[in-house]
Amino acid sequence: MNEQILQKTDDLTRFKGVETWIFDLDNTLYPRNCDLFAQMDVRMAQFIQNLKQVSYDEARVLQKTHYRDYGTTLRGLMMVEKINPVDYLDFVHDIDYSPVQEAPALRAALQALPGRKLIFTNGDVPHAMRTTDRLGITDVFDHVFDIIASDLVPKPHREPYEKFLKVTGTRPEKAAMFEDMPRNLAVPHAMNMRTVLITDPQVGSVARQHWETEITEAEHIHHQTHDLTAFLQDVGKLF
Image (cartoon, rainbow, N blue to C red; front, side, top):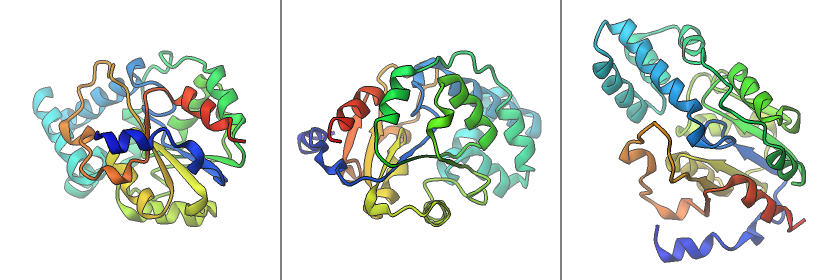
C-alpha cells in the first residue's frame, strides 16, 4: 500500500459520528492464524471432491475458481452445479471451534463503541453463533445478517449490501465496515461508509490467492490494521 494510504490509517477522527459498526465474521472477529477458516477451506474442497468425484487437488482448483468468480464457493456451486445450499453449509461448518479463544479485551473494546454492532457475513447464523460464543461476544451484537438473509447472494456483490442497509435500517454515512477481504470494502466505500481492512501477516495454514489480498483501488481502503482489538481501543478513545 502506498505512503498516502498509510498516512490515512492514522486519521481516526473520521469515526466520530459513527452510529453503526459492521463486522465481517471469519478472519475478522477472530485471528486468521487460529486456522478456523482453514478447516472450512478443507471442507469446501472435500464437498466438491465428493460431488464431482475428482481428486482433492482438482477439487481445490474448482473451489478457488468458484470463490474468485462468484464471491463464494457456495454461490459458484449453486450457479454451476445447482446444489442444495443447506447441505453445503451444514457440511462446511461441521468443524472444531475450539481453536477460537475467548477474547475479553475484544469484548470490552466493542462494548465501548457507541451505537449498534452488527455482523454481516457470507456464512450462516449458526456458524456465526458458534464462533461468537467461543469469543464470548455474542450478546454484544444487535443483529447477524447472513448469507440466507442476503438471498444467498454474497459480498462483494452490491445487492446484499443494499438489502443489509434496508433490513437493519443502517445509514451508510453513519456506519463503519470491518473486513479481511479488500474487494468486500469497495461497495461500502461507494456507499460512504468508513472502511477498515483487517490484515494478518501470519496467515496460518491457508495460503491466500493473490486476488484475495491485492488492492486494486486503494481509495476504498480507509484504514488497515493487524490488530482489531487495539484498533477499536484507539477508536473508542474518541468517545
